[in-house]
Image (cartoon, rainbow, N blue to C red):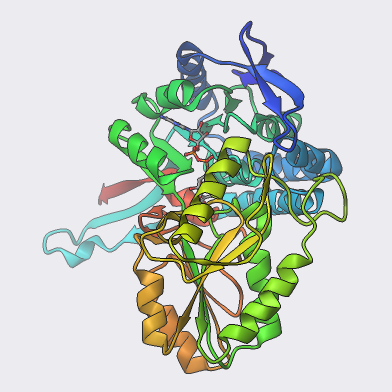
Length: 470
Ligand code: NAD
């Protein structure tokens, strides 16, 4: 595919292959953009913003709704692309497309709710005859840098609110999965978005991504990706608002009074969704000692029912890792834990870029699978005696995106909500639960700011105050 620069679909002599991670087959190519291309995109974005500002809310609503309808009318085509360039099975990909439609619709609805408040100036002696209010205005140019694991909906989570607020937005999609973002740009173009208000520039993160990060004309930068990249970007962004949606090592606590069938089914799904390449991946499973053996037995049985393989096959449950090198890294981490005395309860085998769903226990704390984000289909279990122990274990890592607890006791649930140092706590769902309109983001090393359309809108607008001396 071509990239989308200043309202035109353009080629470049130098291209990058887009491959199917299952087998390395080249499925398409995209331009290998340069830093100059990105600077041209920023110039075009600024000009398009100025030319269209103020962009009326009814037009933004109409365009976002139209784009949602476009994606809906091409649902299967979008799903197939996600399941080819990315790691998801076709069933997982279809869910992502449905969520992308929802994200665009929520964005269209939030566009009509960008309001302000009056300010009671008379609280200050001498200001009795002042009257004022504030509104939220678009920041101008938004930069969006996205990861490979949700190549469509995480782009929609940045593009939707950016357009809803009346900004111009430039997307730098992940190198491995640019096609889904380009399809989304087609949908917005067809829906009537004026040229230059959305651009998708393909290429290397360290080149075109960096040109976007460091340019002072970009007023808000919205990043989803790994913590290491995030910290690098924070050091280079300069004077702009920065939203950081980073990774985690998500904990799920299962109490002795939990409904075990539900807890097992939900935790297995959360452990292996997108082959564990998910910021909400259930990596730490903390089981009350009374149900430890029974839970593990059921979890292993459910895991061993998983079909791993052809992503396009309706019956496949889990696809590959994004590259064979990543699968080798996951294999090495599991081996390190086993060498250090961990017990391999199921899985532990690699075949090319595929890695079997894997459960480990007795993992020493210093092993990588216990201490770092694995971003693969590996889960580690620990027993605990009481809730305080479980909360301490859940909170010991320097991440805090979402946490979860399974319990039938309301008091226990509330104690967990209060005690987990996470941006979101799920009660009787695994950490891998999200709807697109809820506030979403992390505490500690999991990020800065929140997404979820309404919340992203705050990052993509700024407050303007007006004061009248009557
Ligand atoms: P990554 O950090 O490798 O890449 C993310 C993006 O950053 C890519 O588009 C890449 O090209 C770009 N990039 C790389 N170097 C750059 C640089 N120097 N300057 C500017 N841009 C640069 O992450 P990934 O492997 O795609 O994604 C996995 C990570 O993302 C995991 O840690 C996962 O938990 C996290 N994630 C978080 C969320 C969330 O909403 N919190 C969602 C999905 C993924």
